Image (cartoon, rainbow, N blue to C red; front, side, top):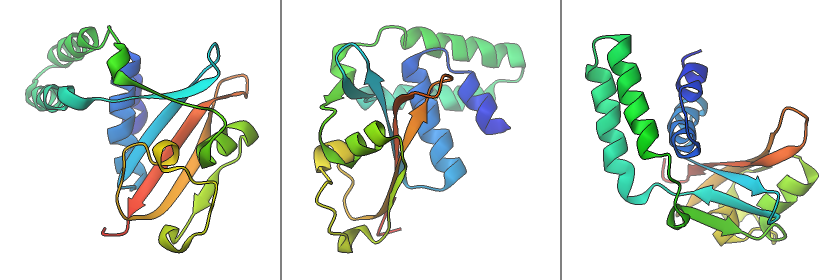
Length: 165
């Protein structure tokens, strides 16, 4: 239940992405995660990067640990949410919807699992789309659709394990 609680406190898309990255990785035991959403107007997939604000995010998490009351925690979360209200284009990375395993997963709405990635001869894999964080030495990966309440796909989630772990 703590995973649901942590995710549900996110008040912005950037905050949601940050929280999901951390919480889902911990909960599912993967070494890295990426989430892409579908922009219906442009018919493309996009993800959000955190770049230079990672330090601020870690500081906010430390402040949450030190907070003594629920009111203090709520105030810290609200302050973090306000920092994320503006989603600038330099934090967004767009991907064509017709390339890579991620596009196939999105269109067919079926999860793909690739074990022993280094020995895989999957020619549909496009590193820039299916591995946008540039993870070196992938052991295995899982790419699955994310669904809206009405059952249509809203994006994908990519989960990775490094061979070195």
